[in-house]
Image (tube, rainbow, N blue to C red):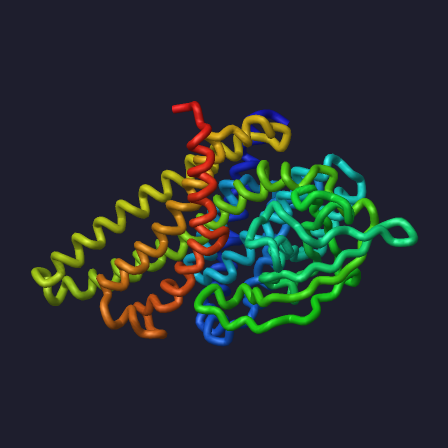
Length: 395
């Protein structure tokens, strides 16, 4: 294939992904209010993602997927975030899991077969990284893998949040490598449907992101030996999971903020036709929000480009202090910006935004936005940056 033909193919693939995302957006938007009101799983949006083959967007084309870049996945997350943040966040978390397998399975035949199966069946993967007793530290586990009498392992883990685990086909779970392993000597293990149970499910009645269905639960399962990714979880987290989380989540948050801004802009257009002079203050506020959104979009694009430029083998590059600071700063900026933009858009609109329903309601947007600083708590991210800056010798 010529270089020109390859570029055409890539462009066509990108267009296909964007078009598919718009189809799912319309479905997600139609059910967003009901998903939020009932705190139920966005089943319709996930069904649309399956129908459009977007659950395998991050799977390489050689394995039956779309071979989407991180930038394309971010655009899908933003598109869904505009319509239904719970749908967007569910998709983002799924893509993080898929990327972890793609980038860290080291060509293990069974994992390659699993990726082909994922693409064919459009399987949904959930993450089980939180755990009671770890204080929210992603890179610490209390539970461990227990060898079975025959080949394989069993595991039992109590989570603080089991995002959509009851609705997923498969799970990726963190655990210590064995009983004597240190808390940070972790593996990332794949549990497939039929091989695990979600038990002791708690209540999920949250302020926002209600459709992610993330109650506490106990996960108990078994796996074959091949179902642990070869790379240690510390490397998976640093090279893939954290950078992909911060960028894909930022895409969702940007979508929430952009939709809030757009509702405020439409409201102000209608109002200014009736009272041009009375809209000056609100128009100035809206202009400031446009600047904040443009800044976040540029920052996100820059971060995506840097992450895409690396490979899983670039552990030395990825763990440079400057790189860690940059991706952490993106998380801090995006999570704070979405809260600010939605809050300010609500002031532009006024009481119509304060209502729980209606064309200009921002109730759901505001509640969903406030989850952003808590997903890997900003205080923890800020503290990590502070520690890094004490030893950082760069500019």
